[in-house]
Amino acid sequence: MELTHLTGLSQAELSELMASVGQPAYRARQIFSGIHARRLTSFDEMTDLPKDLRSRLSEQATISSLTVESRYISSDGTRRYLFKTRDNFPVETVFIPEEHRDTICFSSQSGCPLQCTFCLTAQLGLLRNLTAGEIVEQIIFALNDAYGIGVPTPRGTNLVAMGAGEPFLNFDNLMQAVGIMSEPAGLSIVPNRITVSTAGVVPRIRELAKIAERPHLAVSLAASTDELRDELMPINKKWPIDQLMAACKHFEKSLKRHERFTFEYVMLRGVNDSDEQARQLANLINRHDLRAKVNLIPHNPAEPLPYQPSAVERVEQFQKILEHKGVPAFIRRPRGRDILAACGQLAARSASGDTPVSISSGSMKRRIA
Ligand code: SF4
Image (tube, rainbow, N blue to C red):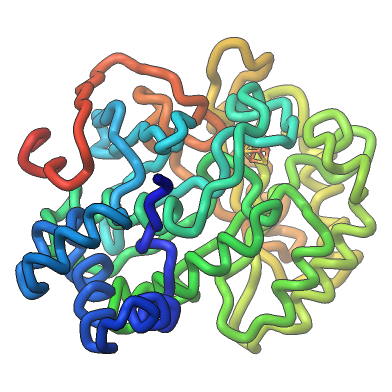
């Protein structure tokens, strides 16, 4: 029997479901809080529920659909989790400790249908979209592993949808997950702590512009001419740069005065990192009069990708040219390269430093601590 995955239900949906089996609304509130605020991972741990209800729930529903296959810890403290779904598809999540606020990078799909040539995930192809519950569960798991089950996050948490997959090709499930995570009775991670990165699914950028409570937008650009972008990010053949810029402009009009959106620009040695290409990028952004900042991301090499990262001085020079032309630009520090956790490296691979576990997420903290 297919178990209902309660983690993917909003509090209102959970109340409806519980009402349909004759349970009062406060039981739904207890369960929602158990899953999202207390971050429990099995009904057995919800000792505020009557025992017979717990056992009925265990027979018909689940709150832990992901199983941890492996957990890797980088020398820089970054953690990568490789999960399997109930139907055996890989899911990867990365926890990145930072000075002020920790970040969790989650996946929206298992694999990815897009064929960005600098990204290892592309080689998996699309395996399937993740459900809202599977998206939320990645966050619950990473928080529990980093801080302890149910322990409040010490500094708040940023989330980025930059793991495996193109989030805008799984838009409904992504937005359902964003809604669930923002509920004050649960994880209470508001949308403006979340950034969604797209390779350029133009219709969804326009759709996001209509949503009031929404995550931040990051657009992965990688090139400022169609010729090069067609090669690096084939999605450009469907939605070329001019259409993408027009959608970004449309989105920008929906931003509040102090808000900006982001272009991500992966730096590939000898491919897209020349002075001329920096000027082209700045001109493109300025020509469309876009209030955007650029994150320069050193490429993370991995076999068999055919690229190397740009040298540090090259990235700095590229940044200078952008800044000189009035485009704010920041250099992102690669994290977790040694455990294949960095941008573009997620391909369900094993790495040295493996700490394999085969467990249900409920007992994760104790077993791997
Ligand atoms: S960069 Fe993102 S969109 Fe492109 S193939 Fe990789 S996961 Fe997919």
